[in-house]
Image (cartoon, rainbow, N blue to C red; front, side, top):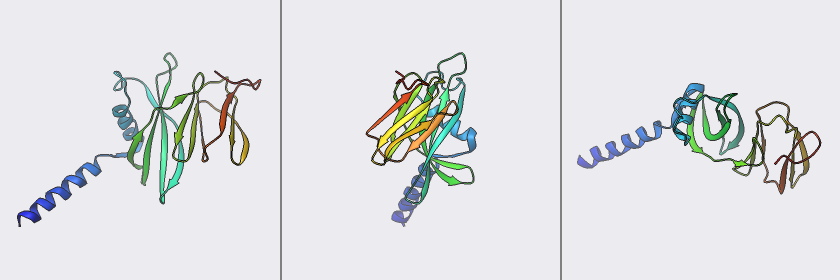
Length: 167
């Protein structure tokens, strides 16, 4: 009997811990992001979901949400955070990441087998990606701009309207 009670307590603890990572809706995603980012003003700073990259892994839809902190008068810092889509606007937290800055307001993140790119610099007009399928030129059409490349690139560049690399 004691073993059964101990077993049930362990199972209930595991279920409680597993349930803690579930969030609901955009407000839940932003609340979780506020807990994950390393910023003393995380509770009060302006934050929005700039967009997301999406992949399918093990028959699950996985999103990399790019959260942006700051406003038009502050620097905008991106914070990519991975969630599994549970359906019905519910998500399970997986991991938060630190993107690699690749020029002013241009970021790259090695994510699963490829890269997710984030651009919030109006001078950036094109992302050039060279991977095993060849050279791709992705036109940046809005800001912030997010795109996913499902393969590891040999090289990638963020270019301005003159084809010059943004640094």
